[in-house]
Length: 360
Image (tube, rainbow, N blue to C red):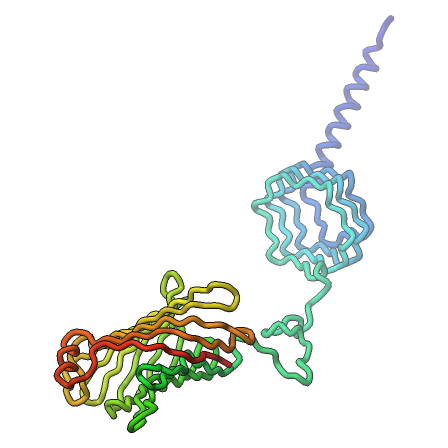
């Protein structure tokens, strides 16, 4: 079979013309301007953008129309789009229904500029001025009950009577009570402790203080204020620290600086050994020390006295009331023992006690 050479030449020439047109079309698309392009109803599902689009300018492209039905599921953007400029692109229209599920953007987009791109329409417009208030009320008024507040910021008050009991052998009433007002961060505390004789002159010896209370850490609180001691008939400045030591030991340490220069230090520790929901055994110990001798008031330098007591309590009424019975023991320490012997006073003493502790 013969093949005409003229037909071969025509086929080759046609192929060359088609190839030339393809290159010309590709070159023309690389510099296309989309600034006025309306894409509201376009389907991009089969769009191939894998070529070189680095010189394409989208700065004036208006996408403010309704693009909710645009489908980008098959769009391939794996090519080089690093130099695409979107600075003036307006995307304020409705794009809520656009589908990008199959869009391939694996190409190099590191140089894309979106600095001026307006996407406000994607959020449904600007939020109202009271959309989020500083107090998280969302613009809703508080109503007739006023602004709410946290419990920790609410000022409260309380009274705690840790000891109100009678010592049978000493024939006296011991007391220790604290009242406070304030918040979890700042409080004013009024505290008093001492004893009242029930025979002879019925003398009352007490040490009372008015102090500012503030937490220092999770387990420790600080106190600072003024105090008055009726036994010495003297005023003092007071500073102390109270809290919970390891193994849940309630600990307190208070220092008193009297106007005559005397310095007193009180140390105390208490532990609650709970037997069940109501019965509790409470052992406690206290030490008292002074910085200098004061023979007029029966005080010697150093540790003067130690007091111990063990109480068995029964808590009732939601643990707010707890009657108790117990045993107390007191002893003089150091040079105070010799001074008491010289004044014909007892060095050691013990007594049965009974009383009540409560709080409200």
